[in-house]
Image (cartoon, one colour):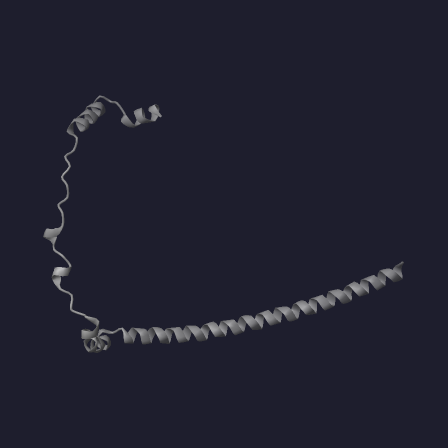
Length: 125
């Protein structure tokens, strides 16, 4: 009985040892893959910052202006005119709505009489 128990424990220990080493190597592989991906991300972020700098340079008006003048006739470009934006006179006037003075007078009279309109709304519901 003790001999079979010892054999079982030794076999279980060997299986656990193999499992731990397999786990260790799997974790090391995952860590190296993570490091490789982090380096790749850093390299791509550096390239992205260079591309953003190039884009900012290429979008400067001093760089774009000669290209626009060179292709102005082919593209049918013209400077913006103020008439394209409209004027204040063309905006419609705000409608003038007069307040309901009778309703306001009734409200103030009920408040002076000590009636709480909010409490009445609560009691109605």
